[in-house]
Length: 89
Image 1 (cartoon, one colour):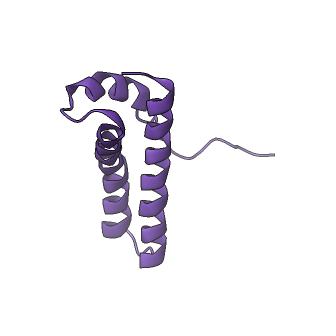
Image 2 (cartoon, one colour; image 1 turned 90 degrees about the horizontal axis):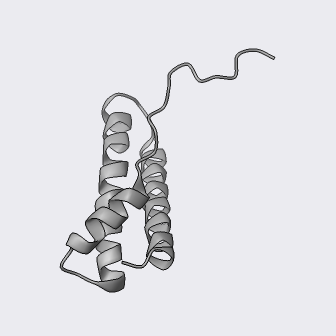
């Protein structure tokens, strides 16, 4: 079948659960607005480096870059909102 391993190792996903539990109480905003603020912060930290790398070092079409940004932000917000429901702060 061949080698199914990627040619280069991927970085591990960010530990949203640890960051949520650690940074959540430090925000001055409680409840859902605080969770959305934290989700926005996580989304920026997660999406921006990948977007910048794709934009600067390649010739990806703008539409693909927009899809990457939207999917990254929505995915991050889903994770943070799930943590908001499952982990009481």
